[in-house]
Image: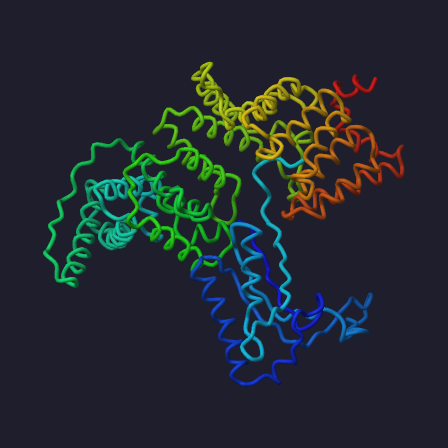
Length: 139
Length: 425
């Protein structure tokens, strides 16, 4: 029973199947429909007993690194922020198989966009590593 | 499901009681779903009443109270539908033994219509007596998610006929799934699986049930040696065998022998017995050098013979056999065996890890390092990933400076291998 993150992005990933303007330029009813769908996905996952977590991230990003001994942390918003991947949020699911994770990701991607038509958004499906050691011997 | 105070009364006894009471109710024709709910309510009642007035017969008490709840539920249902009031008989004393009840409940919980995750959850709750919260913790999901999963499973069973003997193979698979899920937090799932398998062997004569129990015991016995104090994986050939649980090994061997004694020409040992036999041979070796690889290979031959097309139907068995081939006939022969699996499991980390091991056995450290690194990239378990990264780094370092101490350490896996060395002259 593996866990997966279904990652949604503000930007980055493969060429969009259906390029759309930012959401603040959509018709209000399309925005409503989009948000209602996301809520519905969470509820569906809960009903299925597949839900682990769902979170949204703000687009503001700070890159931080160690500054060296006795120096303050070094921060930057990146040399090419407009082309790098920017994660918008995720659903974490606990499912029977990778196939099921792909099925759910495709459903998430069918979320309505402008005009109520599916967004066809690329969803990044990532398996979560199992923390606990196995009870059988490893090679 | 069980609150703390009741657990304190006597957790073990109460947990053993629940499946018996539940089985009695379901056998009488109650819906599994309704019966489980009624039993939960009876437990809450027990929690309130027992500290003051402990019952003489807790099982009968729970049955009576749960039955009363069921009758109430039926009555209100009936009233709602303006139907004739049905009379419900008081609980008949069940003719069944405790062991039969366990088996019966396992068949309910491992109903083939349920998905594996649901079978596991329902088994742990209804037969194991774990709380929903404990099961949720064990699988790192929110309690509400696990509650939903259990609720759906129970609803799926609604209206199903549960008086037919179920599929024992499914029960065995579910228990093995519970075992391999290991232990986390407060719940020792491996220990729980062993407890349930032990109960199962009391309820059925089927040798495979004993084979499964033996396999779990013989594997579990090595658990204390499997991780070092820092939580790093220690492979079988490097484990401190003094840490192995000799009592568990003895029990495992005894259980396995009793299963194997039941075999006939027509009825050869099934996969759990064969895998247990392989585990027993590892447990039996006083040191890695003394491992009886030819005998292990012979059992692997039996294991792959259990399926028509082992490469496709049981690649894990073929992969395990490849390791044995490597130790008996030499690393090159072992690697050739893994080649047959490339199409089927070439994407999986285990395949690459085994090839790393065989390359190392062969003294080909650069190939071993690449295979381990590839395995690490594909691992889905943190401890295994870390282990494989270390294996890769160790093999690479040993290759870069072959006279250093780490080189001798890196070749320790092949040092044990007389068969392979003879083969390579």
